[in-house]
Length: 163
Image (cartoon, rainbow, N blue to C red; front, side):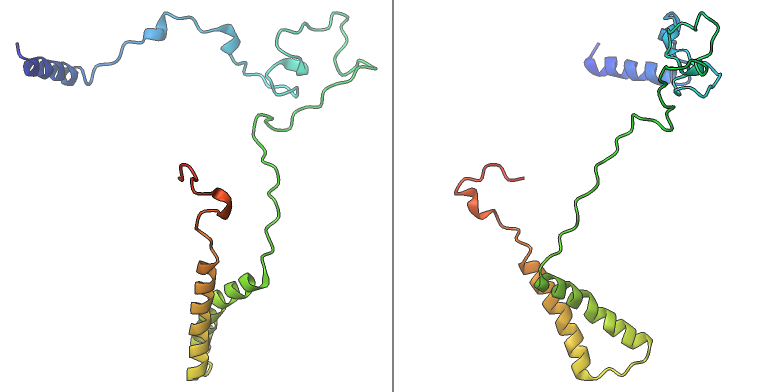
């Protein structure tokens, strides 16, 4: 037999067994008791144990309930799931210098003025249109030039792997 015919036979077996149900290999393995979840819910910790006790804790022998015990501190009931990550508050946004703020204003202000003037039928003289378009172009150029995509000045001649 050639390797090609072996491969063809394997493919025929795969196609023939496509609609068959798979054998359940985990059927012989018992389900661990610690994985069983009880259906009853209580106003405890939210861990599934009645009365707020941890699994495996014994019930009080003197017949007193957990609520009736004086002098013992109780853990507060969990409101939500404590396992979720809560990120720290973000740092405040940088204020930026005056030139950056004027550049952003020119970048958005020029086209915004032209749009409002067109929608509200304001008179648009040639110098107003020129000023709005010039403001847009100047704001864009200033912001691009100030981006600073170059390598840091203090990196020396060998800045290593740059990703």
